[in-house]
Image (tube, rainbow, N blue to C red):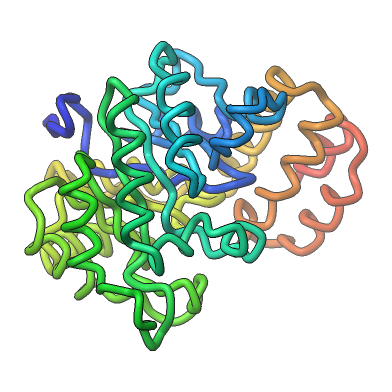
Length: 321
């Protein structure tokens, strides 16, 4: 089966969310192997692109083996987004996504990320600037609201989505939580449904999807066109093979056994070493370990040992259980 999305023929309607500190090229590749149809880079600063930051350039690295990848930008100055979108024309990304949902204080205080929900006119200018310069589809990722009690400048998720559509955006992702919720409480799938009913562009649902059953239920209850997996994919690239099987009407594969999980951790480290060198690879793997080993026998001791590891050999020794 194939899924048509913004002119792309994808393997399924299940995407990997852009997650800072997690969805680098190595992890995107692991998810692709398991059936992820479309993934996104970590958040890339439009200002960082403008000023030629080395860190920004590293975040933009995309390999052929990853499959379709979108670049997610963040910023609140239309001119910066125009420049960034224009500068990415010749990159191998298939689309540009603008982050209007990040809840992190250092992003919000600069008027970026989810702060743009409170300034919908500026958000529209930002989107329009990117659309006019990108030369490829532009999407927006946002949240259902900024505050649990919406302020006077907020216009509601459906109206916000309509504004994005009028700005030329080709698709919109809606995380069903508010900025104030961060990742706590329950995501409102009703907000996703309201957006789907308000716009004609594809709507991607996001929030509280941790299994194939969750994803299919979200699509049924909201009518969303695709589902974006965030925390449900951390330490769990196998969720994509489960999603794809369920969507195709096949039996959902069983959860991976311990040895498959440990083998994947080893491969993940090898990919990180290949891309970033041993020292950085060992340090960056630590962010993933707690997610990978959650629920495994001896998980606490494995996590502790790897957090204290100084070399790849140390890590491999920790995984000999």
